[in-house]
Amino acid sequence: MADRLPLMAGNWKMNLNHVEATGVVQKLAWTLQDKRYDPTKAEVAVIVPYTDLRTVQTLVEGDKLPISYGAQDVSVHVSGAYTGEISVDMLAKLKCKYVVLGHSERRQYHGETDIIVNRKAQRVFRAGMVPIICVGEEWESRRKEGHIPFVLEQLRWCLTDLEDEWMRKLVIAYEPVWAIGSGQVASPEDAQDMCLAIRSYVATHFTQEIADQLRVLYGGSVKANNIRDIMAQPDVDGALVGGASLDPEEFAKIVLFYQEA
Ligand code: PGA
Image (cartoon, rainbow, N blue to C red; front, side):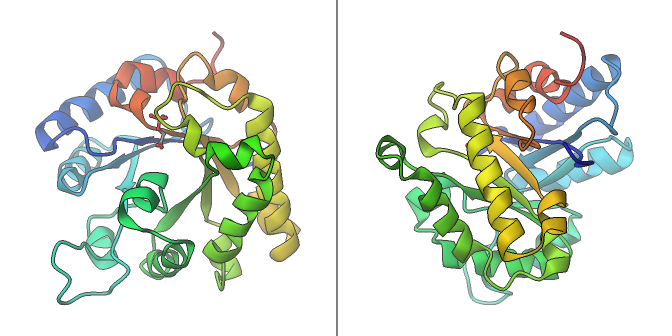
C-alpha cells in the first residue's frame, strides 16, 4: 500500500446523545492509549450526530486526544431560510475534519442524489474540510454483475469538477448497500476489486499521482473479527464502521488491526 495512512471512521448514525458521546469517546481514547495505539499506523475518526459535535470537540481539544471527528451530512445551501439544516461554515467552526456525504441511508430516505453529493462536496472542500463520499450498489446490481459500472457511474457524477488539490485529500467509501447493517460483509476480494476499480477510475479521470494518494475505504458489517482480512487488501485504505463503532472496545480493536492478533 503506497504511503496512504489507513482511516478507521466510526459512523455512529442516529445513536448516542451528547452525554453518551462523552463516555464513548473517553473509553475509546483510554482503550487506544492502553493498547499502545500508534497514530502513524492508522487514523481514527468518529462521525457523530450534530448535537454531539461540540461535546466531542471539547473533549478532543481539551485532552488532546488523537481522534478526528466529523459530521454525517451537511446542507447543500450556504445559509438562510432552510429550517432544520446545518451549513458547512457551522461544521468548520466546530473544527470538523470530515463530512460524510451520500451515505446510502441518506440516498434511500432523503433522496440524496450524486449531483447533490457533488455540490455538497465542493462546499465542504471550500470550507476547508474533507468529504468522505459514499458509493455502493444494491444487491440486485451485484447479482447481475453490474456493480462495478454502477459504482463508477455514481463516481462520475460525484466527482464532477472537483479540483486536483481537493482530490488529493478526498476519501471515498465503498459501501455495498446489501452489506450495511446486515452482518453480510463483502469478501476481502470483492472489497479489493471495487476499491481497485475506484482507484483506476481516478487515475484515468484525474492523475495517477492523485489515485495513488486517494484513500478508499470499505464499509458494511466491518467487525473486529473480519477487519484484518479486509485491510490485507492492497487497495483498501481503511473502513467506515457503523454498528461496531458504538462499542469503544470493539472499535479500538478495529483501529488496531495492524497489531499482532
Ligand atoms: P455497518 O454500517 O458497519 O453497521 O454495516 C456501515 C455504514 O453504514 O457506514
